[in-house]
Length: 137
Image (cartoon, rainbow, N blue to C red; front, side, top):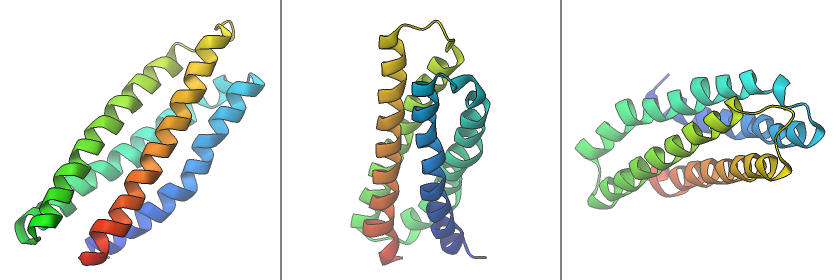
């Protein structure tokens, strides 16, 4: 399988798996978060982080070497988004690790809002890649 086919399949899979990430919100609201913490951490590490690493190591260098000036600028923008998303994911994982059933309602709401924000960021990021960068490759 070539690199671009793998990347497109990854984006499709990630989009489908984001629904699992959204279930985290339901788990928090129902008080069942402890059962999802390990699954969410696994999803972040095995899918999101590895996907970004694949893009950074395999796709972006190819675009930087052979792409147009616009594509090269897009890669720089996407790399900045990767860094921002990864920082937010690290902060989010720290909040999850501190989770327990005696958290204040405001703490739970912070986790819910962070989860929603991460989902939005990742989906918008993937959409940007799919619509603005990859059709040209």
